[in-house]
Image 1: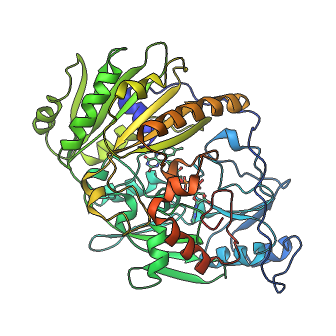
Image 2: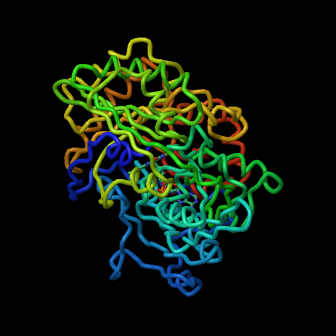
Length: 476
Ligand SMILES: Cc1cc2nc3c(=O)[nH]c(=O)nc-3n(C[C@H](O)[C@H](O)[C@H](O)COP(=O)(O)OP(=O)(O)OC[C@H]3O[C@@H](n4cnc5c(N)ncnc54)[C@H](O)[C@@H]3O)c2cc1C
């Protein structure tokens, strides 16, 4: 679940990020050309500029801007940003960069590892491709640069919904390509489960369509294999559902009650109907505190009956909302960049001793969070190998999130690693690729699980020369 929504639900929204110097790791090396016919040397920026209907801005030019959501990665600076306005522009970018510099797409810019900003390379900024067209029937066509806020606004106006994350500035591309967990996941599945087709510029510069009928391997990999692999998506078509009426809630538990509340939540969500989506946020501090929040597709009375099975608490908020209201509620307030380090673990079954998970936050700052997002429900209706998203049967995904000024990121990463590895010992060494962690041990196995071998095959087929390689790309 998105941290912003969690903080909103849990009432934990706090200070914005400090904007400062970068502490990013060394730049990712550019993959060498695999054939002597591949040209070398810097790209012909002038030639590329003349081919684009959009704009090419070089580092040092007026208007050069490449920064994403997280200031920790501001030092990871591309040589050029192409603000593309068509699929042909994306094709020209791939042609220009291939074998010369690293190339990466940037949609919402929320990569936790800054992977949409290739150091010294070409950032393909797809935010000009942001049209959202609600089609007759249940389909919606969405440009790959659309932000989730644009998507939900257009759908709400048409009485439809797509299960996405709720942070309005997250990009539809990164979210979908890694899976897409949100408040409707247990009822309607992941965002990628609604993907009908995607238009993709592949490493050879071709514009392909991935769907059940066309390029089925590519289509399989695009549904949860992770952003930045396989090609640059220019447009998605999704199936949608009628926008539901919902009831939202938030329960706060006193400091000291976190382990009991987490334990009760695990058992509860495992047996809850698909209409119930919920998360638990455990917040660090001298004595970790805990909030349970969520969204029920149904009435307040139906929700209250389910909440009666959780430990009672005096601090309680329950409200019936239209889907449009719920979208605003979970979106939270104005969006500001936020400096943080993050990771994740996937919780297959209830943690037998939840106090051990809570104890990992002992002594950590109160800007340290464990955010357990409930899975199963409709997510588990799809087989683990039917799409690239492997964590189908898991009970929850837990995001580990530490706010930190960029200049303290190295120290925060050490704390993050201790919590991540401690959780790994409790739940297994897996992770969610959308909470990508540049220091995740055995990252390929952790993110891709049993789907890793097929993902590598798809990458070898569509990107044999590693044009889209980055530090944690499937193609290695
Ligand atoms: C505040 C916040 C809230 C979040 N909430 C949720 C949530 O509720 N649920 C959830 O599941 N996740 C959530 N996430 C995680 C989010 O899904 C990932 O960070 C995702 O990768 C962001 O996508 P983006 O397009 O915004 O980022 P970007 O940084 O633009 O892209 C992420 C990756 O995808 C690649 N990419 C971007 N565009 C394309 C394209 N057109 N074609 C191919 N590759 C592309 C990039 O190169 C990069 O590797 C959240 C993250 C943040 C920071």
